[in-house]
Image (cartoon, rainbow, N blue to C red):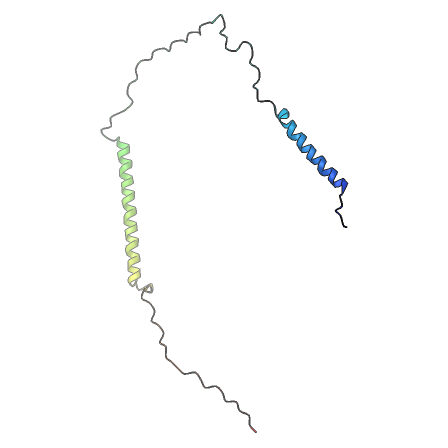
Amino acid sequence: MGGTQIRWRRAARIAGIALAAIAAIAALPALIGSDAPPPVPDDVGLIPTQVSPPPPEPAAPELPPRAPRVKEVTELPPRARRVKEVKAKKIEAKRKRRAKRRRERRHMDQGGTEESPPAPVMSYAPAPAPVMTYAPAPAPPEFGIEP
């Protein structure tokens, strides 16, 4: 009759690990600490017998009321008016230059001048489809065995 072999070294190692785990679980609460809070000192909650009043704060000196800082502007100063006019002139000149360039480009696109060849006209029309005709397949060559 065949029996099971017990390897005693391995069984002892498993038993030792199990005992160590049980000992660690039992010692864990002692290592972490107890649930009870630390003891309270004796003088907590007691009011001291001599209470000194807080020192008085020095009073802030009174300042005269401030005048409002808002100025009512009825007219721009002469320099500001001049700057505004110069900026307006620059902007207007820029607009005119852009319009002139646009006109020149349009002129070039429509045919150009004699000095430059006309620009190609771009068309968005689809290209014509190729014409397809049916042609029968060529006849296969005849293979024959000649005597």
